Length: 190
Image (cartoon, rainbow, N blue to C red; front, side, top):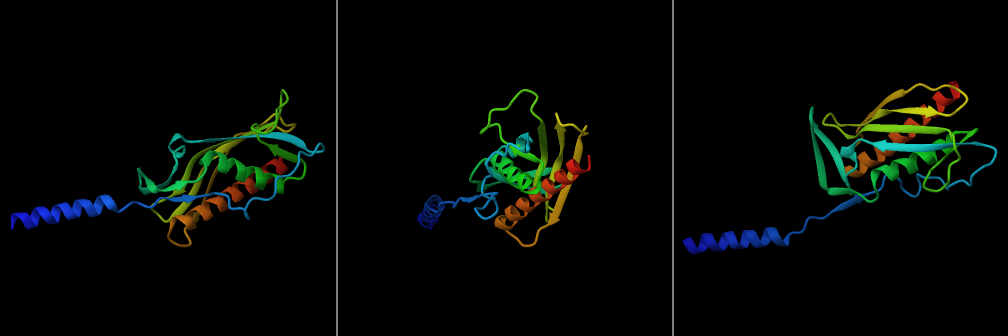
């Protein structure tokens, strides 16, 4: 009997060690969601876009809030690219599509002039919640433009339409588009 139990334990250990965890990678931007990059237009005012994420979002794992005060990293579900760069790409694409007089640029590609207008965005929450919602919370501030802009806060959320990380990532991309529209409308009204 003892040999049977030891044999069963050894088989269990070997089975656990041989089953590999499959890692899934996600892109915030699909090829169809990001328009073709535009050339720098001399007629439009250039605005430097800066995106900062809360430190817990600077991880390769997707994040899920599992109760009021607890977050969980989905270690088998990871960003294919850093979330910060994917978020900035999304915002650049959406803002430049929506804007007629401003052109948002990344400091990674273009050398900026002194006193360059800036749009600084801080993202504090960007994940799925335990209430089956996807949220995007933070603030932004435009500087160096003719109009004076205050710090504007945002809280954008949507209920999950279906289960799964793929669906939540698709909805996170929609939240970025909604934020870009809010920023565009705010800059136009100033």
